[in-house]
Length: 603
Image 1 (tube, rainbow, N blue to C red):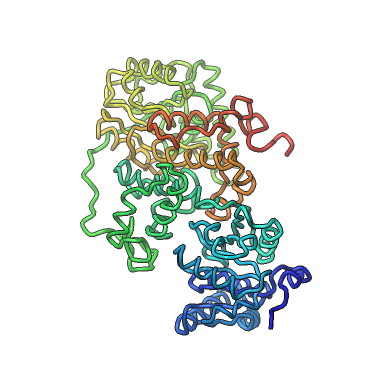
Image 2 (image 1 turned 30 degrees about the horizontal axis):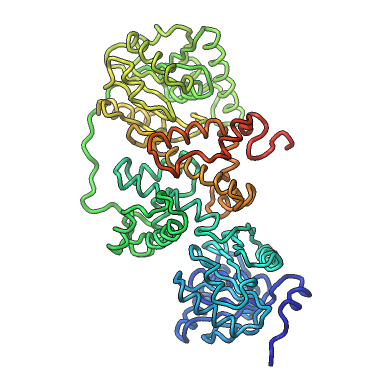
């Protein structure tokens, strides 16, 4: 007897797809099955054999028991939920489902075989969905006679916590089916975003290129794994560093996704970094094997342990720093002056005139007053901090300080002129630091007769709140100077990360190609501004979506950094997206002009 027409059933039901089959009940499939049952739908779980089905059911029972313990479910809700889930080994049980979601391993031929069989088993109106993260949905759909009713439903792990679902349409998927799938996701309490059928979809398409560049950065020994991860957590507010995230995802999984992306794009930035292949060949796949970029207490553990024989290298002793000079009168200069004065250092704040210097100290005073109002400082601490800051319009006042930080305009000619002046004014042995975010530190150093004393100290805005400082040594920087700055960072309660003097340092070299990729995704009409931002916030836990961040940073600033990166590395994939250039040319620079990727004037 033929099953009832599922289109009619779905149309007359309050929510689409009242009965759903899930093929493959591993971690992801089991999580999806529970989420669907929680919505009140009947779930048909299907595994490869009887023993796998028994293990899957035990996995679901265990997961729901944990949910009760954590008070995400009541005992009664768990009982009702489990009553809606049946688990077996026969694929033909899917014949009664309105929607089938496949969650088997990422093997194209295996998925095609299952879809061909489902096409034979299920009524013509049944919608078939694949949970693939990297394979072509179109090629999977081509194994059926109903490609117009096939699409991708990419859930994120852990399913109970992650709100995002990517709804992936092929060129043949009908709008009605995509709309039903989006409504289905919403009825599960998820946020659907529309995506087309290309490797990586929205989230992985942006995430894995970034992870790949982080792996390549580590492989080149530009920075340590700890510094790369700390830089992206503290500098961008990300929940995990890229190398720790690769270990969590699985190095083999990441390499598979990147291979699929590279096969489609032929962008060298998508070609898996060689170290990924080396780790896979060695069986070092991340947390699941107990070792990847990091070593873990045991397979499956999240606790990182020190590796045998790993010792810190000997470091030169630093120079004593008793007083500090800050050049500049903008937000960064006053923020840095605040950081050092709070830590007890006498600070000479030098601007182009005494009036500018007094204005900068007034800005610092307002910042400290806000801290007092919010209870982060006492009035006595504020007054003590202000007493340590001396505003001046004369560079000659820097003659006796031990450390000078310049925070003037991001213009190489301006910075070189300042460093040449500091070279004549400052005492021998004084450390001269630039806070540049994009210019070569060596170019500042060679404006002096003491390049060994010059180093980069890239603070992040706002300096009093942001913990990260990138410590940038040139090929001429004295190791004693590097040691000095690292010690000073610790004293002012900042987290220093070390890197060499190349474009972007750590954070910008990883962040801005990701932002540029998001702009390319938009200009190719692959996804909308809102969907891309939503996908990255919900799928990766980022504090801001790429377009939100671009509008805050400033499109002109972003374009400058993109151009610097492209000029330095000469990678075609790093060339600034034309849409970014066009918006800057039109004066749409983001929040500061009222319009960027969004119209802020209307908000």
